[in-house]
Amino acid sequence: MTPRLLFGLALAAAGCITTTATGPDTPAARSWLAENSDARMRISTNDGWPDDAAMEMAAISPTQIVFYTKHHRTVPLENVRRLVALRHPRGALDGFLVGGGLAAGAGVLHGLLRDLRPSEQQPDCTMICSHADAMKWEGLLFGVIGASVGAVFGAIVGHRDVLELE
Image (tube, rainbow, N blue to C red):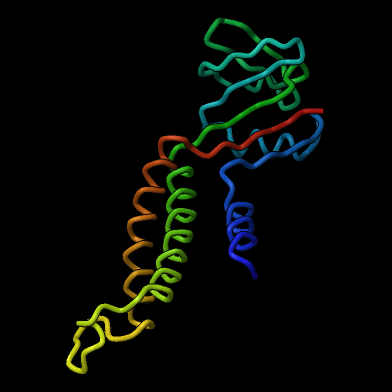
């Protein structure tokens, strides 16, 4: 596999957005709403009115769900076009995994392709004595740094679960 293909597969497999497209009265929509009821949400309605502020979801009855926005607007589920649930802890996990995996892969590749220093080629070397040793150590070092940076950025950006209502 080429490095570009591997990079594309890694990003596709660990994306930070999950989208569900369904109708408002389907079991998939009800399941999505139940799973994301505690998340911070943004709403877009069929009339083009977006509210990026925090909102609350309320079940008036088992079959009727409405949203109360920050601007004191009541929006029934039938008028919702798109819901976005934002989760910062899940974003930190996504960033940790993506950043750590990509950086560890880059470290392994760097350890394989770099030239060994003269001290690493001596018979009495103690730490890195071959390209295999360099791959292990640099993969670990790059991976830890990448996972840390990825977790911070992922926590800031957050993971988005999107419900598109058709």
